Image 1 (cartoon, rainbow, N blue to C red):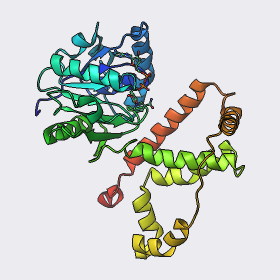
Image 2 (image 1 turned 90 degrees about the horizontal axis):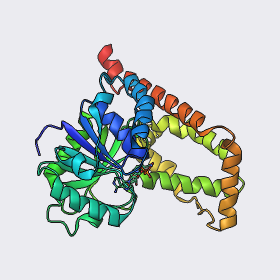
Image 3 (image 1 turned 180 degrees about the horizontal axis):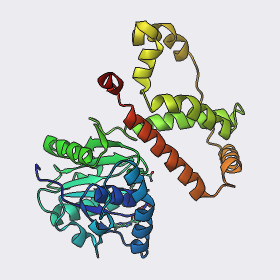
Image 4 (image 1 turned 120 degrees about the horizontal axis):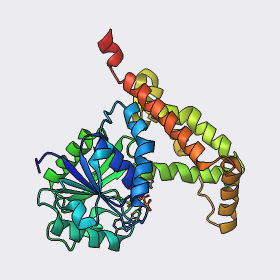
Length: 316
Ligand SMILES: NC(=O)c1ccc[n+]([C@@H]2O[C@H](COP(=O)([O-])OP(=O)(O)OC[C@H]3O[C@@H](n4cnc5c(N)ncnc54)[C@H](O)[C@@H]3O)[C@@H](O)[C@H]2O)c1
């Protein structure tokens, strides 16, 4: 699996697959895309038109990007000469079982086989396969051409060589892979997101804040902090010179005594939250909101790139 990554197959070209397509082609790979959707050509054209400027803003040389993207008639054609396959089809275990059995049969033996799945671990769709060693999860955050994290999650039978190859591959396309050693449901990122989302819904249901105010609390405090330091380093710094030990002993105890509560799953209570979120945001067109989000995310990425840890010291 020390093969260079020259040709990628993208299977499933919805929200995630189209974004991977642009990213891989932006980093010089030939990309073969397969999806039964009848509008595949138009979907690729419009995704490349939208995403290419995002990649250019991240310093990617986008010359000839579109020429490296090819529509495949079917999965067989897409994967025939692939060095790496990124699967982004429906989130159904039966679909993944069938598809990965086909990939094992039809890809070159060195090809790395990656699934974007958010919730189905590789072990769930590889137990019946003979050649499961090169299959694992590469779970992105949406959209993967902007958000750098990829959670690399091996299944029970994935080889260490394939894990390292996945890390090498995602690093080569400018991502930040993190290897996770257990197939815990939701992996790590979505578990963290889920914990915060549950509390957000609870606070709105309790009438403590509106959805807009809750979003402001996050974007004006935790969001900015967490783009620069994660929860552990943030707490270590929050503890002052005594660091993480001090904050754990000092504020940690009272924080542990908080009873957080769970949001109500009653359909009427859930509907009230949906209506409150729609009241806040549904009058602005989706494309405007998404464009503003992407523009601001790019600005954050650019600021972080200009201010990497220790860069200030190195320059002085
Ligand atoms: N949307 C997200 O925020 C997100 C984030 C991370 C991971 N994921 C994961 O990525 C995967 C794709 O999610 P999505 O949001 O892009 O879904 P999507 O519904 O936007 O796209 C799925 C695509 O798969 C295609 N498809 C259906 N049958 C197929 C087949 N036989 N061969 C090839 N393609 C086929 C569909 O036509 C569709 O275009 C899922 O496993 C999901 O869990 C999604």
